[in-house]
Each structure stands twice: as structure tokens, then as C-alpha cells.
Image (cartoon, rainbow, N blue to C red; front, side, top):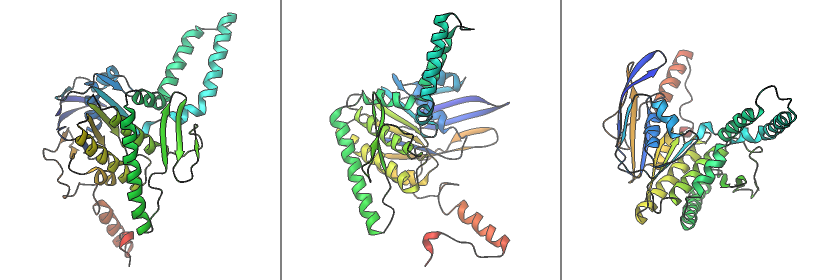
Amino acid sequence: MVSIRGVIKYGQKQIEVDIDTPLDKRITILTGPNLTGKSLVLKCIYTHAKRAIGRIAQEDIKHMLGDLNCQVDRKIDVAIYVDAYRTSIQLYEYITEEFSRIKTDLRRLEKWGEAPVNAGELVESLEKIEDSIKADAALGVSAKKLTDDSLVVDAYRVLDQLREEYGEVARSYQLFDDFFPLRISASEKGLTWTDLKTGAEGRSLLTLSTVFSPALVAMYTIYAYAASRHDDVYLLVEEPEAHAHPTLAHFLGRLAQRLAERAEEQGLGFRAVYSTHSLDFVLGAYGEHTNVYILRRTQDKIYSEKEKWDGKKPIPGLTHPGAYDVFVKRSAKEQGQRGPGHPLRHG
């Protein structure tokens, strides 16, 4: 159970926090509107890990939580915290040569006694900035070092089986078959990628679109699973569906579900907690080892619903046909015409 109580400062206002989220299944999914405390739950778990792998230090996370009382009743040996929207490794590749040149010039000026300020301190500041924006490469390596090679192979076998299953469906229904286009791996020299359809591969991410973000989520999912032979490993992911089309989001959820099944069979310590707004991801990950909880907020409070989602009832604002049908029909009525309806329902 994750319990968060207290008051958090939000701008000039104090907001009450009253959240209880059980962690009694392999996968826990948090959903609901923005600003309902989903990230607070991930951060709370992260601060309780014996070893934390993430872009932000545990102490900085504790500072962000402020005076909130944050409790976790689970043993967490390793926490891997991923924010799929805030990955900056591609930005780092754009500016790394400029950073290198600036640091070289600063050191040269200091050596010649021409630096107007302490150039060494400036270089240290630049290196801290570099470490921050290239974090995914370093975090990937840190996570990979914890893995068991046989479990990495096992996880990729699960991924390849899923690709075959999705491929059969794509061929049967004439759907796009690019549901999982890239595979990314971490190495000391940086992230490497392979396009699974064309066979193209490379090290630099500069030629890629933001589709590498879902591939990073898959990479961390595999590494977390493969690191759980002897440890309780919690994968914490903000917005796993970031930059993913619907089928890819479903695929990422199903990958987590399949690895949770394997972890249960083998008695591994793999667990994952996801914060998401994607029904596709939720449905992909939903199963015997998955619980889904809805978080909400009022004018003065953020809180968690007491009951878990049963897999059937609508999730307000998330499940179709909710807001989509309402807004489309109202818009059509206002314009005096028939709305388009759902594109898959046309005869």
C-alpha cells in the first residue's frame, strides 16, 4: 500500500492529499485527470527504494513532496523511474559537440589566466547539465548492469512472441503492422537502435522521430524484469504511451502483462506502476496480475477512489464512447448536420 496524506502547496493554494493505492498485484495502473496525484504516488515509491535509478535524486524528490506524509508498506530493493515525455537524450546529441567545445575553451582560458571567472566551476556546471540531459543513456546502462542475461533473453523472447501475435492480427484484418517499430538497447557508448521492419540500425537518435520514446519504455520494462532475479524491482513509468499510436500503446501494456505473468511463474521480484491516460495501454496491461485505480480531484482535494476498476465500468473521460460522442453529437447538432460517428462503424 502507498499512502499519502497531508497538504501540498499548489501555487498560492493549499490542496489536501488523501491517497491510498494498494500494491498487491504485479502491475498497478493509476489513471484519472491531470493533477490528481498519480505522479505523487510514483515519487513516493521512488523515495522508499534502497537503490533508485532515475533522472532525479531521491533527496530532490523528497523535497518536491514537501511535508506530505508518504508511506509504502512494501520492500523495494530497486526503483527505476521513467518519464517517457521528458526524455532528453535526443537533445543531448544535438548539443554535445557544442558543450565539448565550450568546456575546452574554458579550460584553455583558465590555463592561460584569461578566464574572467573560475572556469573550472563553469565546466563542472556544464557537466551537471550534460549528465541531466543525457540521463536516459546513463540510466539505461545502470539498469542493464543489474540484469541477469538469461532473463534478458527470456524477456526478448516474450517480446518477439507478442510481435508475432500482433502481426497475425494485422495480416488478418489488413491493419498497419508497425505496432512496435524500434528496439533500443543501452551500452556504454550510448543507446543503439534497430528498426525491426527494415533491419536498419544505428547509434545516433538524431535520425529518429519521437517514436524512440515508446521503445525506451519497452527497454526499461525488459531491464526491470531481468533485474528481478534476487531483488524486488519496481518499474515506475509516467505516461508509457507518450508518442505512441494506439496499437503501440496496447502492445506496451501487453508486454508488461506478459512479463508479469512470467515473473509470477518464476517467483521473480518484478513489479510495475504506471501513470497513464491511455485506455489502449490500460486494456493491453489488464489481466490477472493487474489492478487499475482511478484518482480524482475536487476544488480543494486530490484523492483515490476506494474501489479498483473492475475492467467493465467506464473510466470517466477515458473510456470510449464518453466525451468523444458527446462533443461530436453536440457539435453536429449545433451545425445542423450529422456527426461522423465512430470511423470503424461506417458500413
